[in-house]
Structure formats: C-alpha cells, structure tokens
Amino acid sequence: MNCPACGTAAAGNFCAKCGASLKEATCAACGAHLSAGARFCSRCGIAVQGEHSEARVARGRGVQPGPGMLGWWLAGVAMVVLIVVIAWPIVRPGRETGGAGGGDVAPTGGPATGGGGVDLSSMTPREAADRLFNRVMTAVSAGDTSQVRFFVDMAIQAYHQAQPLDADGYYHLSVLERTAGRADSALATARKALESAPDHLLALAAAAQAARDLGTDPQVRDYYTRFLAAYEAERARKLPEYEAHARQLPELLEEARGFVRPAR
Image 1 (cartoon, rainbow, N blue to C red):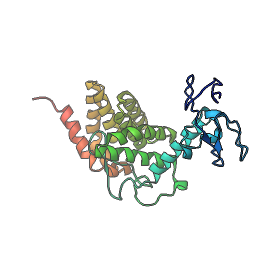
Image 2 (image 1 turned 180 degrees about the vertical axis):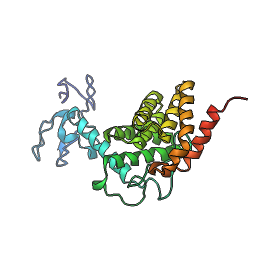
Image 3 (image 1 turned 90 degrees about the vertical axis):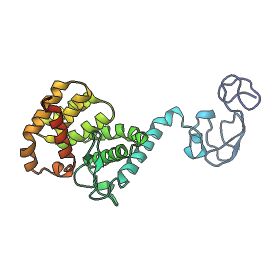
Image 4 (image 1 turned 90 degrees about the horizontal axis):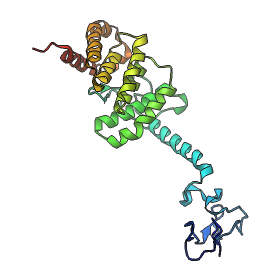
C-alpha cells in the first residue's frame, strides 16, 4: 500500500518516510471506517484528505486542527476563556483584592466589582478590562503565580482595547504591567495618567513604584514627594477610585514617607 500522506510505498502502522498513520481511520462526519489511503468516505461521500482533512480536525474526535483551521480554533478558545473570566464572580460585594505593590486594589463600581450574575451584553470594554484586572489581583493575593501568568497579558490587552482610559484606568494598567515585570511600560503608563491628572495619588504611587523597580531613585523621590504634597487635598476630593482604594492609600502614604524621610 501507499502512504496516504506522502505516497511512498509503506507497510505496518506508520509510514517509514513521513511517520503518517497507516491505521484504518474513522470518518468524522458519519463514523464509518475508512481504509488507509481513502480519499472519500464510502458511506457519506465526504472528502478525506489524509491527516489534513477538515472532516478529521474535529476537536471532539481528538484530531489536532490543521493549518487552515488553527487560527479559527485558537480565536474560539480565547473567546471562551474571556467569557468564562468575565462571567465568573471575581470578588464578593464589599471586598477588595491585593495589588502588585501590596495593599488593596480594586476597580470602582459596575459589574467589574460585584459578584453574582453578569449581563455580558451590557458590559463595556472597560468593565470587561476591570473584571480581568480583578481576576489577576485575586490570583496575586492568593499567591497563584500560574493564574497570574495566564491572565495578566489578557488583562493588559483588554485595557489597551478599552482606550481612552481615565487616570484610574491607567493606574490599573500600570499595576498589571508591573505584575508582568514590565517596569518601563508601567512607568510610561503612569505618566500618561499624570498628563491629565498631575496630582492623582494612585498614578503618582504607580509611577514611584515603577521607577523604584527600575532603580531610578531620584524619580522615585520626586513622585513620592509630589504624592505627599497632594495627599490631603486629593483625599478631600473623594474620587470614586480613592474610595475604592481607601485601605490602600494610607499604606501608600507610609511608603512615601518612608522613602523621602531624611536619613538620621
């Protein structure tokens, strides 16, 4: 017999030249047995093109997707994962999750912070990004590094797709980039937030932490000094994101004081 993949004369269970299986296959459309080398199913007539037939790349029959269908298959898997993440109740109402720099970080309001059922059709790109942010921060708090690695790039991409962002959104993105070990990107993102909100406490803290990761102490001191100077007036504004991070801000305050306090 000839190998159905390369045409070389072959015997046994596998082709000695290309390694293709010579075992009798099963039609993915109707389940009928296919003899080795068959190009059409004798029962239903569907085309069978060796290992690359679209009829045999059905995932449910354990055959790997062929080159022509791989892109669609991966896109489908990514969409399923995203829907599962968004629909999963990340945090219970009233609960905040731990951030990359310590303390509590959680998005403000909307479906991104509540448990229970989620109406995916009504969720905005920003709400979906916030939901993913919470997923990553929950994994950080739990010390689940595998979950962090799995979701952090997806969350970063979600914020890029949710542009334009406000200062709080840029803060979330900066935290995610630091979590992913991209301190340079995290600093650039925090600076974007400060362009429109130069005294935003969370953005100043994010910039300081990213600069600290990069080892640029003069910049760290500058951002923390600005943080301390703006703290009281900014807290009096009672911005939604400040209320959402109410437990984290005092920790950031102590962190800033500790860094800029003159050495004795």
